[in-house]
Length: 299
Image 1 (cartoon, rainbow, N blue to C red):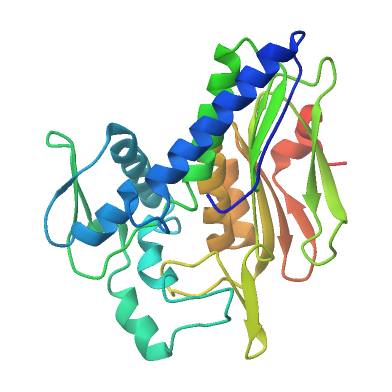
Image 2: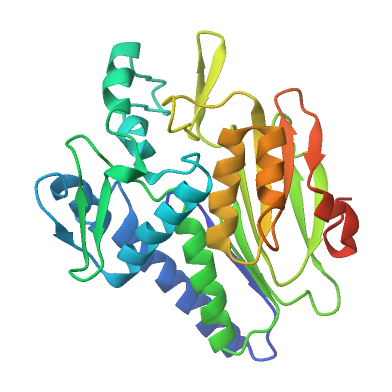
């Protein structure tokens, strides 16, 4: 998944802890093998390679994730859209390469969740036009930490946190105290701008500092606005708290694209969700639910 995986848990028996962690890591490797856009033999790569020519049979897991992605696309009026990869594939953040305006305009024609044709009865995915690509980078890690939390609970673990990069799922509390999640300062490494005391929730952070390069006086980063094919520049980071990792990760991408005011209003309208945003000037904003709920009060 292109990121570090971390598990912290409490167990009375060391063997129980080791078995639970091994099971989580195995699940992470399984999801990465199936959903990585960088592995040519992954299920996702097969869809990207063949779905413009014919319907591609996919696993129930991938089908359901794509169906959920379309739900979020509709809910957010297209701010979340896994077909952003039709444009995103033109960027190379390691080498500082960005597409020309002409190439960007051509690729944007293939962006749009309505180009995803799902057949529930046949269990297939088809692209409505050539050039469409999908990427679950804004979705699969949330799914992975959700699965990991379920695995830990099946192993009898009641107090844990599992993280995949900026996505975490918290199981229970930290034995009588909340788990604390720091919201990092997007411009000062090692510094934090808020601390969230949490339990039994998921949290996802997206930042313009994760994968980026600078050119022509602006920062090009991995969060892409599906409507423009470019990186939004009005936000530096978004942290979303929700009941599950899939929702938290999707909402974080939505806020990044929507902007501070509209994005916070959107999150506040979703049951059980809250958000913390650092805007382009470094100012901190958050949903009113964080002010009202002591368990989530930023410190």
